[in-house]
Each structure stands twice: as structure tokens, then as C-alpha cells.
Image 1 (cartoon, helix red, strand yellow):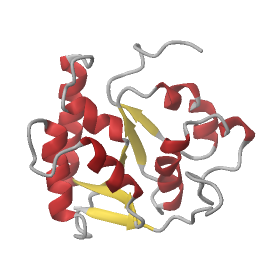
Image 2 (image 1 turned 135 degrees about the vertical axis):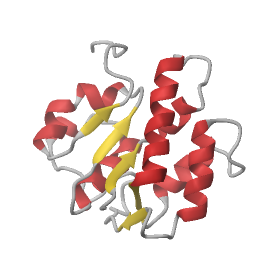
Image 3 (image 1 turned 180 degrees about the vertical axis):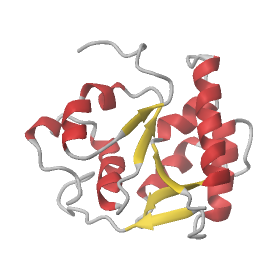
Image 4 (image 1 turned 90 degrees about the vertical axis):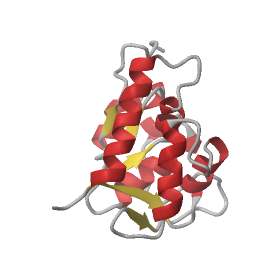
Length: 166
């Protein structure tokens, strides 16, 4: 059985650890998605370690105390195992931080969060164009049209009702 590739925005791992401001239902949905990826999925990362380093800033190598930390421990243990984690080469623009040649050249996406561009570039660079999982990041919702037009699929794990209009 082929594993379904997924890209996980850092906010999913953080939400699964259930900080005070995250509703328990959202945290549970995020934890379920992370568990499903670890058991049956294929996590997509960049070869430069940008995504891994971002996870590292918010999560614990010990695997405690939350579900996001458990997922990060699993990732640390399986990071170089191609059965569970696929690493994709992204071409970086050395002159501009957070810029990748795989990121869509679209005027409509110029306002998209620079630190999340790595996830969009990964979705476009991977041959299967995997979905990006996000929990609480309204940028993916506000830029949904241009992202869809660029071939990027986003799964809003916690729904979109909590996003405020711009």
C-alpha cells in the first residue's frame, strides 16, 4: 500500500500540543492527523532542513508532553527513512530569505506569509503535489484562490470558521 504524502505546517504540531488558546476539538483533530501520517503516511520535508528546524524551535525531541512532541520524536527517529519521510530539493534564492524557485510567481501571492512559503514550494516541487495540512493559519484561507490556481491543495484541519475576514 502506497503511503499518501503530506506536508504539515508547524501550526498543526503546535495546536496538537494544545496551548491554552487552542480548542480541545482542534487539538484532537491535529493529533489524529499527525498520528495518521506517522502510521500510514509519508511526511514531505525539504533537504535543507528549513521545516525540520522550524519544528525544532517549537517541539521537544523527548516526545513530551504533547502530541506534536510525540510526532516530532517520531520524525527525529525516521527523518532519513524514505519509507516514512520524503525529502525534496528546493531551489533557494540566496539573495532573499524564504524565496524558492518552486514558489508561484504570482502577484496575488506576494502578500502570503514568507515563512510559510517553504510549505507551498514543497507542495509544488513534490511530484505528487501533496496537500498542506494547516490548523489555525488564516493566510492559507485568505489566499486560497491563488494557491488553488497554482496547484496547491490545503487541508484546514480545524475548519475555517475561526478565521476573521480581512
